[in-house]
Image 1 (spheres, one colour):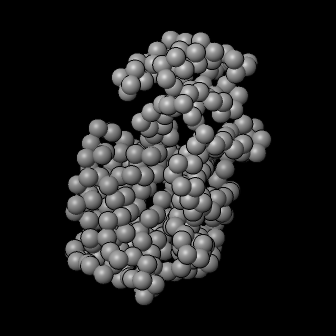
Image 2 (cartoon, rainbow, N blue to C red):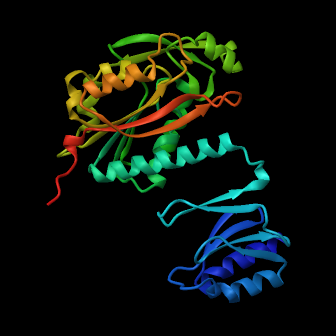
Image 3 (tube, rainbow, N blue to C red):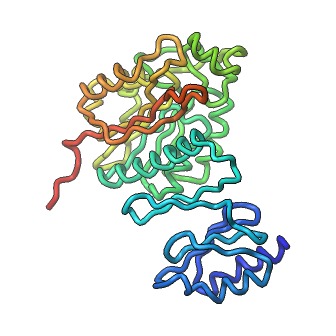
Amino acid sequence: MQTLYRRLLRLMPRLGVHVTDLGPGDAVVSRRGARTRTALAPGADLLTRGGFAVTGAGKDAWVVTRGKSVGSWRTARLGDSGARLLVDERQGGDERRLQLAAAEYLCAQHVTAMLDLYGVNCVLDVGANAGQYGRRLRRLGYTGRIVSFEPTGDAFARLAEAAADDPDWHVHHLGLGREDTVAAIHTGWNTMNSLLPPSDYGRGRYQRFTRTRTEEIRVRRLDAVLDEALDGLDAPRTFLKMDTQGYDLEVFAGAGERVADLVGLQSEVAVLRLYEGSPRMSEAVSVYEDGGFETTGMYPVTREAATGRVVEFDCVMMRAQAAPQPE
């Protein structure tokens, strides 16, 4: 059956149908330029004869699933945007997981739109870990320079591998902060390694914080490395992304007067502090506003399952005066 499924999916483009695979046995098919849902009739007939079920998922789009029923798929119109949300109710209908997944998607789309609107040609990826942010930017169509900074050895090795075949993705094995120094970073926390110790709240929330080791790393100020990062760009338009687990304001402070060279930033800001000494959201946003940035998007990163409280937001801010003026 799975072999037949793959054959049918390969056949669909010949019928003028676009196929998006959703996972084993499931796909969304759509036909560009079609005026009615009956435009899929030849493909739908073929699929149903092959033991698959087809149901509409909005104009000119259908969900195809292996078996006789597609009742687990639910679609919701997203206002008048022309987009629809497709939900697989077999996953349990977890509202919190759905919201956070949607927020991650919307944040990435928003950042991409801001990079395009402001003509950004260099993204500073601070706290790059294994290169997840850079890979996402490339998937979403950003073609400008990426300069990634990651201080821990294991993560940097994976980052360097991710960027190896991308000539405009530069990587640096160091952290950024308020001053040039050598420091000890807590490691073994996966994507949550930090120069700060966990707070009482953090230890209660994450079991990983009970086991830690430290690694000595090199820390530089952003203004000390910025000229190298921008070398070769005639008219730099720079966006600063920070994900340093409670250390973002220290990174920002290290930019000094070069903050004026940034057209936008993205920072993970905390409502409930996971790290001792990290700033609260209101403090962080106030500092960024004093630097000339204004909020364009705020997206929840984590939420408590028991209370629904947001723990952290991804905050996107732009320097409105740097937006291109309409002709």
